[in-house]
Length: 100
Image: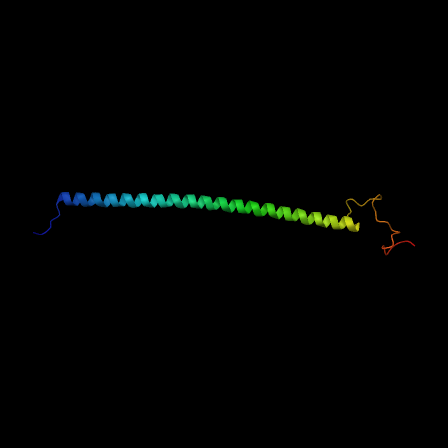
C-alpha cells in the first residue's frame, strides 16, 4: 500500500514543524539573551578599565608635576614661591654670578 497524505498526517506534520520552530525560536532567544548579558558585562569591564587608566594617568601626571616643582624649588627656579625671603643667596660660593 502506498502512503497517502491524509488530512490528519498533514496536520500532525504541521504541528511537529511548528513545535520545532518554536523550540528553535526559544533557543535563539536564549542565546541572544546570554549574548546581551555577556556584552553588558564586557562593556562594564571596559568602562572600569577606562576609569582605572584615567585615574592612573592623572596620578602619574600629578606625581610628575610634583617632582618638577620639587626640582625647581631645590634649584631656586620656582617663580611661584620665589620672593625676596627665599631667593638664592648671590654670595654663595657655588653661585657663578656671586658678587665678590
